[in-house]
Amino acid sequence: MRAAAVSDALLEIENYSGAFRNEDGGLVPVLHQVSYRLKTGKITAVVGETGSGKSLTALSVLGIQPPTFVRSSGRILFRSVDLLTLDARGLRAIRGSEISMVFQDARAALNPVFTVGRQLADVHRLHHGGSQRAAMKRAVEALSRVSIPEPERRARQYPHEYSGGMAQRAMIAMAALICQPSLLILDEPTTGLDVTIQSDIMELIVELTRSRGLTTCLITHDLGVVAETCDEVVVMNAGRVVETGSAEAIFTRPADPYTQRLLSASQMLEAA
Amino acid sequence: MSALLQVRALSKLFPAGGGRRLRAVDGVSLELEAGETLALVGESGSGKSTVARCLVRLVEPSGGEVTLDGQSILSLPPKALARQYRRIQMVFQDPNASLNPRMRVREVLEEPLRLHLDLAPPARADRACELIERVGLGVVHLDRYPHELSGGQRQRVGIARAIAVSPDIVILDEPTSSLDVSVRGQILDLLLDLQQRLGLAYLFISHDLQVVRHVADRVAVMYLGVIVEQGPTERVFAEPRHPYTRALLSATPMARWGIARTRLRLVGEITSPIDPPDACRLVGRCPLAQPSCAARRPELIDLGDRHAVACPIATQSPHPGAPLRAANERIPTC
Image 1 (spheres, rainbow over the protein chains, first blue to last red):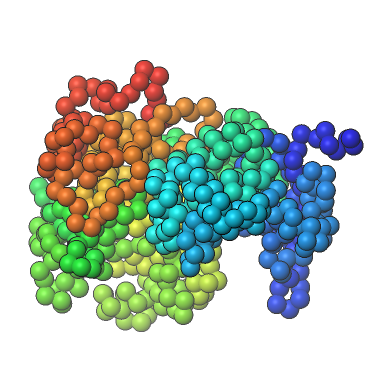
Image 2 (cartoon, rainbow over the protein chains, first blue to last red):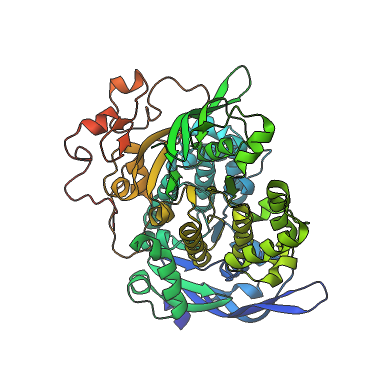
């Protein structure tokens, strides 16, 4: 095998730069030489505040960045293949089955006119084929696996009948269990949920990552969530990666001034 | 001595269809003294925002009594009521939604001056300049529209509007939850500074326990429309007694390395507030539950030092939390 195959990173983003095209055709640079790696089998947090480019970079991995975004340089290597060179068909083969994503607002991500079970079953058939009946059985199993009580009944319900935390569990079931990807990207999965629910969801994410050997990327602005659950941390600010390191290093000896400020802004209140 | 603001058995029922009623607020009593900060904490659906909205009459309370300086204000005729409401102002969670997008900052700030104080235009203009500077912005911002400001700047405008008519009480409904952490700190500093300079009393509504610990003198914890625990902030954080308070505190993540926490878990998710039985609201989720919990609703039990807990089981135990904690358990206290 080639040297790249022995790399311990499942995904490598190299010098990814780009800009938004505004109404009069001008370019507003938003990402500047973004580089980070997602180590195989680890949970990596990408943290930053609003506008830091953390979500935009992650959306680019799946080729679902906004159409006004124009890339100027960089590569995104997944198993040594540059995702940015793939055509629509090549990307479709990767989306869901190799890399899947969970979004912030789960109830908005689910289709309101189909039952949750049906949506999970459809995704299952799309990726693995088989009968509707068998797919529905798998959907119920997946809901049960993410601790949704009464999964048979819940599978027949519509998204509006789910609470926010429950809907996020269903999305995680779809992204991690039905799709069976090797890389799971979660974009602010617990933002907007209550703390008790947030804790439960994070425990589920960690447990699924460990038990299924997933590589997980958690995009978040909440350093509290990161300290307890993540192995590696990437800190982004204003379209740049300012620091990367193990979670322990970032929390105990942050080197970059921005990381230090972000950390103390998050901790200031706890130290009071 | 009576408190500045006194709330007695406040309740708010919403019709829920089929003759059923949703008890958003169910017998809440609290007191707020001049210059102090009382935090009302709880998760979504706990009724904390409804309490705030009842106090400023954005929703009409279904029952209970609210007194300001000993005078009952729920029964006042409209004119007199408006005068009282100059003294209670509110800052909302989302400054995008609470500022009129078609009004410049100057108009936003002058409107309450015109309505409440009947100031002449030159005096209003002077006051607007003073207010905008007091919240850390400049006179240049007066001619901007809300969309030309950042989230933090917009929240500063919301705060300036609230203090424009020199209130005694400001109700802050999640004032920092739509902001980034670095901006959150600046807004909290501004609020603390204004409180000291102007002697404001704050009713601080929040789900963010770290923020609450930083700003509040006292805390009241709400769950499904009732206050389950109330006390001085440090006491509640260091020795939470009610199982719900403990579940909430132990679920709060810490942005620190190497903090071990063992969670007190509640079963399932928050139950329905529609026609709840006359029992403890935590029945069915509580690890401490006894048969007696389902029989009637627990009253707040005074533990001294203004610390009160609505759980006879938790208050019986000789040491705070003893029956729940294993030897190696740590509840985050920092």
